[in-house]
Length: 614
Image (cartoon, rainbow, N blue to C red):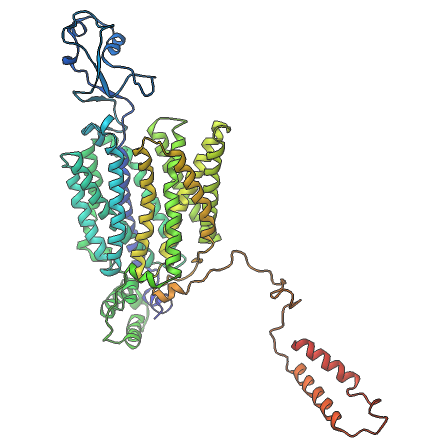
């Protein structure tokens, strides 16, 4: 049975109960993205730091002498050999123990910090992952490694828990993910070392990925085609709200364990969905697609009752629907579950999944190129942070206003083109452009790259079949996490490969323009449920053909008439019959050459009928 035409309208359509469930599916987006973006504050390096002075390395003349601050700094901290523009952050001077006078010309050694570091205040926090375990200088590599591990957890979670959404169902996968993420979030607060922190954040990232996938899918499967876009974008606004409120939470909490506890509270509140099943029910679309007939009957009956369908009609549509399901499936139908491994037998679904994974990878990975340019105009952390938040909100608004009118594929193509052009212009002309133009190009590129990422996720959820939607969407989102981790790889090498990073992603953005043209259009179309429906999606033309254009060049000069005219055909038959009859009549000698086979009107009718037929 076709769910959208035969099942969904009889349960009340996008009724009151569906709207309530959709609203409660937005809160997980807020909780998940609050935990995701908190990683920015945990790994933020202070603006300034230096070694804590060690009295054992200094002679008594320095410790007891009445020195100015400038003289003291020059005797304690050496110059940075790397830049030569300031004092070293990672070394101290070590003097001979027998130095008795002011050691300006005494031979001294450069040694690493022995008593830790002194830090300036981190943005919004007094302490974070960096200052807690002194991850600077020789241990700096652990900071991008932490983000890479966090993204690795998200990749694994998207793939594994996305597949569980297709095996266990949306509700079970959601409850399992919420339980694990809440437990691991509380455990992160008690981390005793950097290694334990990395391991726990990796595990929590995997659990958070399952929460996001399951809640994203359920809200789309409960909507009709006209509401899907707005429902998805409102969830995006909840993520923007989480990113907007996070600096305030960090300023109030001050210490990173307190902030971690605060961002874990929304996850704990989501456990209430376990007790109240009506807030996050199982998707009836998935139950029907996997042939779970007894379960789908109970689910559809609940939806129709809560939507008030049986209370409004004399004959309950829900009961009629149950009888139709019994006749279509029977009671002995066995459930069948699918996984992403089924994509090996598909062609269209695998192509769509691969293209959208590629576009999401570009949309997330190229954002690092634009945000890095923002640091040229201001080194303040909050400047680049809130520019990113503002462009994310504008990206949601842009998608809401344009995608339903111009189509998913057209807007995805436009986002890829603008992102690629902005990246190429910054790559080639940054040295020659005015500073304001560089800022404008960076903001425009950041805006459309975020729109490209959000639209890729939404597009993927629409074109993937219900039976493998969780696994396929997990693969697409995992590719996006790979793009996010690419920025940390650059920081792991002290931004040594930034130019190559920018060149690669700018080239990929231009290449994605050709790939997007191979996608189908899902605007105002029903969600595919089976693999067969997913494979039947066809590539529509970007522009409608003109009605007066030749459909067969060199063979036809005007469109053929599709209407059948019996009068012309009968005239053709009668004229042909007369011609054959006259051929058989005996003509007299000398008259045969003079007698015409057809008269004038008959010849005209024959010519007209032949032209209309051919």
